[in-house]
Image (tube, rainbow, N blue to C red):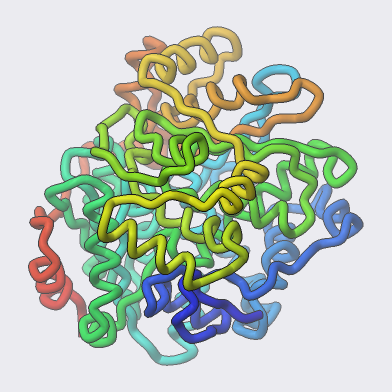
Length: 463
């Protein structure tokens, strides 16, 4: 299995090389050269398996010879051993033919744990084998950072620096990043929004002298292994509801496009998928693009669903690559227009391809709060605000004859203020995190300046 850049100008890599590299050296994102397919019998055989075995079968074709079967199984088993639900990603019914896929039973209570816990195990195996050290730098709108810190804290051959927008994550999200006391993890509060954090991260990867000197590696959703790990729960959920003999639809609350792109990969692998529905909050660049054909940034508006407060959706580049017939030069031109002019127009042919694959919807703050309140009253379920965005869009786009699965991306206790405002009930943290607000914090405020950021990384990484 080989991996190519969406911009067509970087070396072709193996799975392991792409995983450890993160962002391609031409600024693009790595994707598989070809998407392996599962037969209907292979999909049906996933029924009744535990999550770990299903994960092995779905992901194994993408890994090539980077890991042996024994190593890959070991990594998967270790990754999900700490999850708080035996099913790992259980389904809960909200209404006739409408289901929640609970993805918040991992150690940091968000869907990012499914990928990050696995990447932590795979990095550890690969780096120990090669005798290498890496410096991981990540940008987060709230959940990726805590998941990365949880996955890599205390590892000898990894230093982790996480950029988050100062004052724009929830208190729970912030404390999950700032309270670990291991010396190899560093929380950096950047003066700016998430798009600024993401831009400085890409700047570091594109500063090749710095990148090579510190052994820079990325675990944001630009990393293909992140997307791959998320493909699994699309299969397990669909099979639980009758796939491959029955089509299902998915609604995904998304800002950076990685999670719904994983659903697209599952569809390409053979999962019978009726609809892939993009759910956005008021930061609706993805919905605007699919509606108008124009992908153009505007000011990020802080919201009660902060993990979606994004105007530059990195993984959308992967979708564009396929929509443009895997023409790396065309994608590179679009990204140059984005850099220079703040946006671009999608060609008519590519736009029609995207509209054939994805439906989109936008939800206001008031609609989000109303959805939390209504679902609690009618079902007893407490939704985090991101999940509420997904449920509201799903309800507007579902076919009653086709099961709709809405991804529940975070535990409501990560956003207690919004949930309490909507439902009048303040969700509590699980027992294992009950002391989170009494733990001392360790955080460094940094300016939105590349040179200053690189200096912090240089100074604090272990040699």
